[in-house]
Image (cartoon, rainbow, N blue to C red; front, side, top):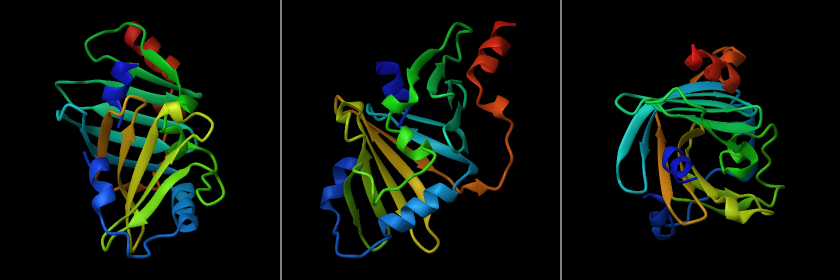
Length: 200
């Protein structure tokens, strides 16, 4: 599980200090934005709990699918598909580490229907003059950790998220400009396909 925390998503500690006077983007509007975010890709920078940084490219195909391709020298690959998250070590062709997607905060982003206003997932919702943030977690399993999503307005755009695990460690994923409207094959996200490819 330690490897998963490092791979996935020290901004969260700063959030309570930000002024919450601005109205920001409503939960209904944020939900509509996420539900409309079907296929997207972007470059990302990941800041790990120990301060180290990684870069790569992210592909999202909602619901329930994502692909994190990490740049060299790391060369890690993370796939979310079929209700699982698989972590492939770039230095090995062995079996990937796997975890149920529903046991990760990333499940809240990739869910088929995001309804932040109705669900009991939102822990906090605030804004300042430049951004709106929402922190969410599974209300039935807070031990799975939480995810803090950061958006900018006009138009609404997801710019980063911060994952905090059950041990309090935080991983920040900063997103570049999202390229929308692409069509991806399901094989891009398929865990078994990647296992077979690496076994050849």
